[in-house]
Amino acid sequence: MVKARKYVVKKHFEGLPKREDFDIVEYELPPIKNGEILVKVEWVSVDPYLRAYNSRFPVPYDQFGFQVGIVEDSKDPRYPVGTRVVSHKGWCDYCIINTTDTNVEPAEIPHKLPNLKGLSNSLGVGAVGMPGCTAYFGFLELCQPKAGETVVVSGAAGAVGSLVGQIAKIKGCKVIGFAGSDDKLKWLEEIGFDKAINYKTADIAKALKEAAPNGVDCYFDNVGGELSSAIINQMNEFGRVSVCGAISSYNDAELPKSTILQPALVSKQLRIEGFIVWRWYSRHSEAFAELTKWIVSGELKPREHITEGFENMVDAFVGMLKGDNYGKAVVKL
Ligand code: NDP
Image 1 (cartoon, rainbow, N blue to C red):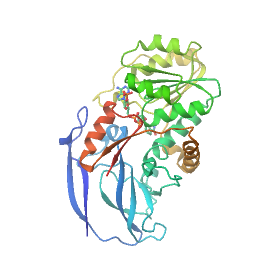
Image 2: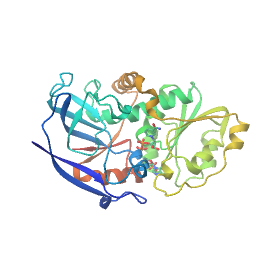
Image 3: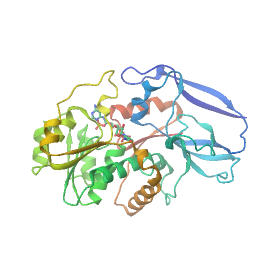
Image 4: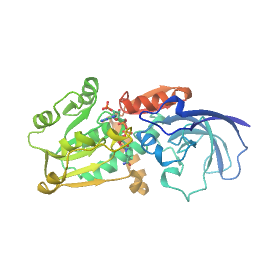
């Protein structure tokens, strides 16, 4: 028998999640059956959607989320002992995965970690995982950037945003990022952003006008709210907006109001489109290959914000929501 621990959400979050909203439950895993694998979890991801989706589930529920682990016992020959697996089994230290159950949402289907060419396995929940695919497809498919165009990214120093900005540079664009501290701005400029702006302290409209005197062609929106309205109001004719997320509102009980966008959408003939990364699920391996290639060549520099220890999951989660992270927030078990 293997002893496992998992986080159970026992109370709906009010504002930022708190340690008291969770229980850590210890239990014994049964022996695995045919078509199952036993996985020792090595890396667990903390992501904004864990906050955004909290009210959708009745409590108590097991905290879901992406993780990378190593197969310790297997009754599926496709996953021999020692294989590294990415799954959505959440905040636990050991789990049993049914590898044959494919009649589930794409996020729930486990997959073998792609060949990361010696890079850290943690990238399987980051730049070569769901956030990487989000940046790759959400930006390239919906913004259709052309070399020489001006691209703006909000949430630019986070997991998805920092990749989008670097992909835009690879595609020959001018890139402006918005982030929440001066130190993050320095890092963004180090990894190639042409200009980074602190959305907490700058006069946003004025700073953007100075950084993008010829207007904005593409906007990758991670945050929503007034920041996004200010950016969309400075877009060029036929500009494209990819709406990835709205983290500025995830901790609010009610959606805040922001400036009406229709005048800009009409007069500039903008295209604005939201997406969920699973739209491109069948093409994820294409993104994994391209992202790995760019990382190995040094064109893409993913950064990780690593918290150590299973007991520190909530701190890592809240820290990410508050903006402690540079790049992808992950927990190492
Ligand atoms: P990040 O790594 O970007 O972490 C969240 C960041 O959000 C923080 O570091 C913080 O940075 C910023 N933030 C927090 N509060 C605010 C606020 N009020 N206004 C502006 N910024 C804020 O997370 P991810 O890269 O994982 O996710 C980024 C976005 O992408 C989220 O909205 C998420 O929901 C979305 N997403 C959507 C997917 C899809 O399929 N559509 C898939 C994956 C992610 P700072 O210091 O700059 O404030």
